[in-house]
Length: 310
Image 1 (spheres, rainbow, N blue to C red):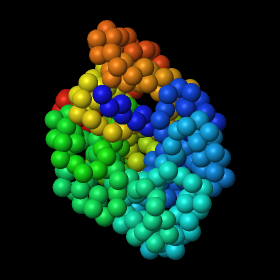
Image 2 (spheres, rainbow, N blue to C red):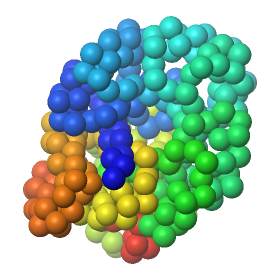
Image 3 (tube, rainbow, N blue to C red):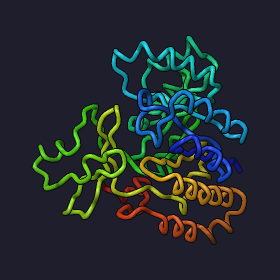
């Protein structure tokens, strides 16, 4: 049976070797100038070091260029792609056609993964970008298992699905913080506003939820109050032949990401190689993740079963 890639987003260069040893097949990195909602900031020196370490450990490096680009950044795209080509990264993750057009000219052998976060909701669109050079499509997180399976059956490109971590609920190019909810007259408050990198939340007392606010140079990102976790529901994705399963490390510690990677590596291997053994241990693996979850961040199955409403 085909074994899917386990893709993880590290927080820094020091994570790379640890994640490889924990069982990651690939890592996705980048810098805020070009990529959205990164678990860590990787400048050019860090990208080169990450590629060296990863390739020595036998895993791949993908670099995020899935930002929302305005005219003033277009002149920088060619130079950055030239750098990534020379750094020997394994793929570029893109959303804007400007990246695809530049790659065609500068790095025609570079693999491309199409990722717009929310618009990969049907297989026609995935194949549209596949015909234009993308090798992989990263599916929206708002899809059910049934929809994901149908897309894989009809897709002519690889399919990547997030199996663990936060979901972005709202994004603006502006630093909105709590103004969006205040304008709507919602009874919410913003806490830890000056520590937005890690510790700022919108508090919804009515639902007893805290929504992390993740701000970078790309604007404001309001994240889900819970983390997706389907370590005990992997059978359908693996049986469907999904090519890559992603652990998103946004706003998580290095230690947490490494430990979760170890558990998913065990789950994937057993689910592929010994389904009975996986069935016996999957609830225990889920409980181990529950035990290390940050305070106020429950686990759920996202939209896979249409149970979650954010």
